[in-house]
Every structure is written in structure tokens, then in C-alpha cells.
Length: 236
Image 1 (cartoon, rainbow, N blue to C red):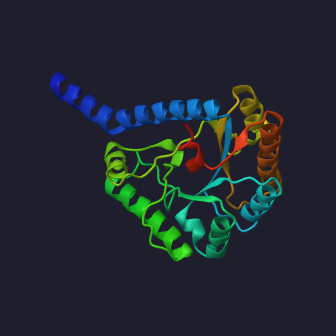
Image 2 (cartoon, one colour; image 1 turned 180 degrees about the vertical axis):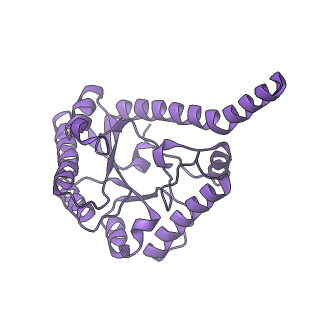
Image 3 (cartoon, rainbow, N blue to C red; image 1 turned 45 degrees about the vertical axis):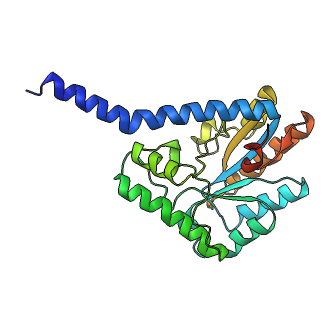
């Protein structure tokens, strides 16, 4: 029979490994929401790209509105799309990382997760022809382990979450392209999570464009400032 002491130790280990990063993430999202509302800022973040079709279309829409966004690039999707990555940078948008293979940090070893983070940075550097080595990082699914959290802290990497999920990856029957715009209008500021990776689904592409367009329209109506994440983080 497993002793009570072992069960307590196991509980403490799990809490430290998963619970502490989870609490950190929740607190970070609350603070991010407060900062966005205080600054009356709308931050559009696009995960899992770049996409061959959708990413350029979103950039064109942003250009028409004189707006900048933050793109959390997935390393495996950069391969063959290096020119699009360079366009994102040239158009003045912020380039961030979402890792390489979209690994769930709780389901793989910490060493594999850290390797995936580094591979994501390396893929961006290779596409841009630079050696920055680290970029702001958004953990897939918002999940981190304690070891990954310490690794990112040690390297002073900004860990970036979101305050509003646009619902674009939810089940088809509950997706709502107006969700982020509606909620941003109510709160007066938000960091919106959306996605720009390729899918063979024109309806999905139109929904993503509608999410960005409606969010920008609300920002104009409510006099919110549209800015990338790095700009929000220095607003006082």
C-alpha cells in the first residue's frame, strides 16, 4: 500500500510541476487584461502561422487600417514560407514564437519541450537571416511546466498569453466571428487570440478575416488604440 507520505509528496510534486505554472499563467492573463483595459488597447495576436493565403490577406487588411499585430509563428509552418515571415517583419508587425511543433508542455518531457522552444526561435532566425536567438513566446494551449517556466525566466523571455479567445478553433456550431469584437467593446481593451494557419476551408478563412475586421471596427468605434504586444507592455 502506498503510504500517506508518498501520496503527499506526489501531490506536492505535481502541484509544483504543473500547478505553479498554471497559477502564473492565470495571474499573467489577469494582469494583461488590466493593462489592456487601462490603456484602452486592442492587441491582435495570430497563432500557428504563417499561412500561404491567410497571413498575407490579414496583413493587407491591417495595412488598410494602419494597424499592427503580433504574429506567433509556428516553426514547422515557417518552412517554405520564409518570404512571408520577412514580409511580416518588413510591414512593421511583431514577430513572436509559438514553438516548433505545437507541443503540449504537460504531455512531453521538459527537455523535449525546451528543445521545441529553441527550434522555434531558430526557425525564425533562419527565415529572417538574423541571430536574435530568443523571441517572445506563447506556450501552446497556454501550458507550461515548472522547468520550462524557469528556462524562460532565466533567459528573460517574455511569456505572452491572451485575454480574449476569438473562438475560431472551437467546434463549428459554437464559433462566433463577432465574439472578440463584442467582448472587447464591453471591456474597453483586450488581447485577442486568433489563428492564421492554412486550412482547406474558405469559410474558416472568411471567419478569420471577419474576426480581424470586426475587431478593428470596434476599436475605431470605441476609440481604442490598436497596437502590438510589445507596445502594450511599455504603456504606463
